[in-house]
Length: 480
Image (cartoon, rainbow, N blue to C red):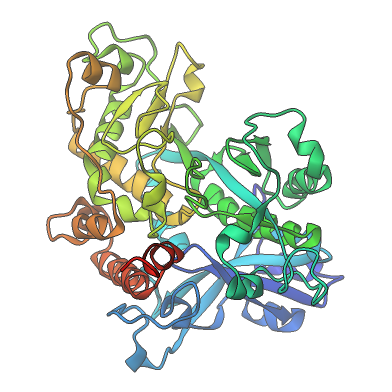
């Protein structure tokens, strides 16, 4: 928010309210929160309130970690963290009768919890500010939409209460019906089929201080894409989390389930979470832009990039193989990252190249102030605070070390038949790079966080290995 809110402002701000909603972001990017009375909120607004550390001790299905996720270990009894409201995150929730809402940060022993993505990102932004820099970002979220069935199915004579979880207890995922069939990217007519839902999301986003810059259909059945308006990186990370909350909540009202899985359907393109990022000085001047094209650039693709921009890009490219779990945090993430489905699979970059891991956008294809990088690896399942934190940290490492870009752009690689280094293509492989003693991740992030997040993903792998999938059951039931 542009206006700073203080504790002294709260009585007037909440004068006509009796309750307040608060939420923090867990390590899967999920909002965890509660409603409290206005009187209680006014009493804890400055110093915070107790919030069970179990939100960092269990997975997205509330199953306690089976690995050593030591930020909230079982032997601690899941003691409370302190949840401190971020007063400047204030907005009202339009679909919940305009209840006031605040995001929180998690603190323990007067220190930020290392797994709290909001605190992590703020720390990196503070470091940039100390160097007269500010990160700006925009995120594009693609997501598939499904018609929400009742427990007993579509048009069933039993329960008419829409409940997708209960339906999936009895049915295979393939029984779900996408909002619309076929693939209609940028269609002018397709949104009309569910226009109330389509425009409700756009209009409500504006009221929720989570504005959409571009909003259209994308490739795949029932797929939409929202490009969130560019803003400060900390605000952008919050807005990604809040947009998912908004879309899911609006979906409930329309009998629709938006799905932010990276690859919800076999044979279809995955759902991306592309991140556009740039650095400016504190007055707003783009620091990636060059005043005039560099005739001596190592490659023409980098001619419009400043020296700082090149170092930042070099830092990101060098770190990519070691930070993949923060771009692709689930088992399903890596099913999107396959060739020929508009998703990057290697360490690559290029001017306006939508097949590269990092697409750079500089003059002459944009104005200098819009110079930026588009990191195309993340899917819609990203944790926005972790992903933006690691992009900034990796890029700034490149600036501090004055790293040179070691990888030629995609067009040069193709012309010279250079084989690009592949990125890890499974969560297991990615975790090995991420957690290694010499990993760039350990250099640029809190090692305690690296160990914690590794443990949470190892738990995810264990749960997956124990699962019997529809594919293997159908394949083997009669044949072996």
